[in-house]
Amino acid sequence: MEIIDGKALSQKVKDEVKAEVEKLTAKGLPAPMLACIIVEGNSASEIYVANKQKACKACGIESVVIKLKNDVSQEELLKQIDKLNKDKKVSGILLQLPLPKQLNEDEAINRIDRHKDVDCLTRENLGAMFSSHHDIVPCTASGILRMLKDNNIEIVGKRAVVIGRSLLVGRSVATLLMEENATVTICHRHTKNLDKVTKEADILVVAIGNPKYITKKYIKKGAVVIDVGINRTENGICGDVDFENVKKLCRYITPVPGGVGPMTVSCLMENTLILHKTHNI
Image (cartoon, rainbow, N blue to C red; front, side, top):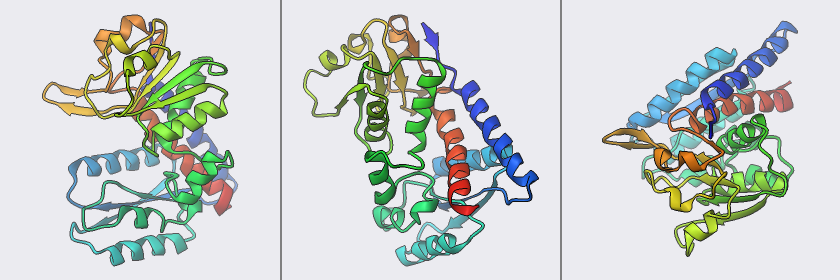
């Protein structure tokens, strides 16, 4: 059993981004800029945005945070997005989710210029990804694929099972795995005999938001297990996979924390650089 070190790989990705940014600025070109919009009132979101700012600084990417009041109107939110869309200095726009109930999340996301949609969440960019004509892909899905490739884990012809069908993770990572010629099954809460399906997986990706739900009865011996879950419990942070219960069965496994999470942030930096080089230079 080998543990995939997301922190170490994340640092490698950030170092690569930093080197590319330094090449641009050495030529007198502007550095990329990431703009984050956050609506006040969600402490977890504030921590996530602070981590993204820290990563920007480490990579030489400029960052700006627009903080909006908790009672902000949809009209004001859209105005802020429009302003950033028009700002030529801004390479990528990130709308920190979730939003308060009075705001229409779907409308706000799709107001972002597709060429600045760093999370790859607009309908245009998702459509481009699902049709294999993408500049970028969602950060978590990108990070998962990078983890597999950097550990020389074979994907071609392998049976991959993804538990969870969200656009941001489940359907996105399934699409990328299919592009790499894996045979992919997506499971969800209505899947019958889930353990029988997952027991066939050479690669198992779990993104369900249910602490330690996946135990050894779901795991094929020698499988690669990627745990996307981040759950805050009385005993601390844990994933969707019962790590101690399943690790001896696995060929590779990601820990929580220290696995997929750091990769999501570093791939956000990578996406910002790609959008900057593709559309701002």
